[in-house]
Length: 464
Figure (tube, rainbow, N blue to C red):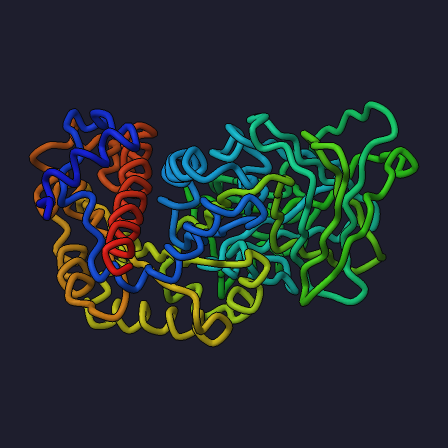
């Protein structure tokens, strides 16, 4: 029987595992998935996809924090897996960087004539009353009765035939459309401004300046009194505006079906853009997610992450788990720990929330495999080894009932951020990573899946 080193060398050739951006070829330890037998039902679906041209799609749902919302890790994993099994579409996306050049601009751009309020599940006080934290982990709302939200593909590999919109409400509140003629949509100014308090200013004078109420400023800034001090930065909820647009320029796409807060629309030709318009008049439109697919068989890799969030923030929003079915999951990947460490959450409390998240997922998807990644290495306060993440790593590596991939050791472990920051390509904040750093992580993670899948196939042949 071949030993692990020989097997790794063979699969390195098969999957073109080249020298990674850390300057070293991934080791057999990097390729190891603990408790890999829990992934066998997922591997069975990969094998069917590989052999059966009519097999359709296999969906991976990766849930996490800013490491996952940022596109580089997920894009790298998506690229590797789609090269092996086919490109089934981009999957989940969301207008995260609507008012700024966000990470998603490298793959998609969003435009709208209306002002939207975006807020995270870890900062609900910044939300418009009535906002919902669904599949995205974000609230994204507008009170405008007539609006157009445009999505534009930057990476043409991800042209789409099918759009799935995720939202609550009956009748369904949104409708995708195409443009009858060329339409230019300009974003209105952001509906949130920063104001640095000057000497002798009061809340009343600031509210009058921006033509908003005192209570709206207090609510937005979580203030319990009217006392302010010079030098303090206030977030001012500006008046909601929109730019008038002719709605007759848009033709609704063909409706396919609707199921549990997910409406599916189809178009025959692959498209690089789409427009979302209101289907019904509402006091507030809430968008929970957008899913883009093509007509090809293959992998869809859904990255669902929220900046600053912990597993507990997701666990506090039941709608998130109710809407996961929209992604047709065949494998869940869970990646948390960085933000927990900055809140100084104990390993016991961290594991309790990870287990609660798994329980919440299992309520709706009892038979779908789950894999957990250990969190990447980081520094506390930018200078001290992160003892909390080290304890999370120890706890996760003791698990026996779920598959685990060890990102912590891949990024250098306890002293990695101090001893080899340039090699692991950690960012200046000593929390996040450079685009190349994330790309290396995502590529190695996907290749670990591929190698373990090949080993599974070999083991199945030996049983025949």
